[in-house]
Image 1 (cartoon, one colour):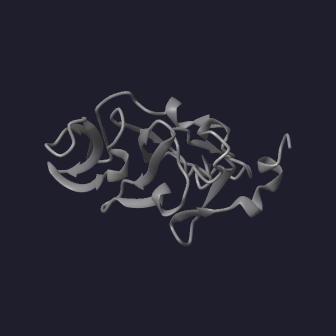
Image 2: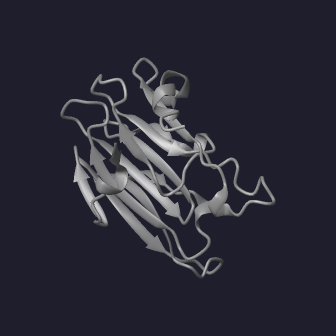
Image 3: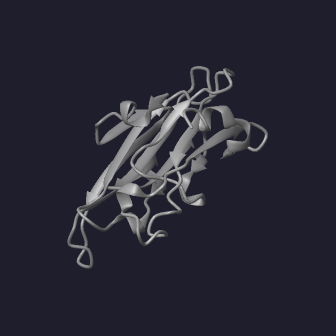
Length: 178
C-alpha cells in the first residue's frame, strides 16, 4: 500500500506535461476562515478547478497535490486531495490535451484524509482505496471515533477510462484480519 500522503509534494505548485498545477488559499466575506482549492493551468489559462465547497468549514481545509504513475508505465497522473478532519474529496486526473478526471471520490460516499494506492492484482495498475463515510451520525449511541469505516476499492477500467467500485473483485484483501 502506498499512502497518497507520501506522494504529495508539500509544495503549492508543480508543473508536468505542459500543465501548471497550483493550490490556492483564499478567504471570502461570507467565509472568514481561509480555504484552499487547486487549479490546472495551460499557457497561463485555468482549464480546470478542483474544489468541494462542503469542505470549506471548520478550522480551514487542506489541499495536497502530487504525481504518481497509477496506471503503470512512465506517465504520471495528478492526485489532488482536499480535506478537513474526518472528511475529504480526492481526484485523479490524466494530464493530456484536455485534462480528464479518472476518479472523483465525490461521486461516491467515500473519503476522509486517508487515501491509498495498491496493486492488488499485480497488473501494474494501482487500485485506489478509501473509507466509506456513509455511517457517520447514523448510530446515535456511537461517537464519530467508533463509527464503522469499511474500505472501498476502486479499480481502473481501461475501456471506460475511469475508476469504478471493485470490492467484489478484492474480497480477500477487504476481509483480511476479520
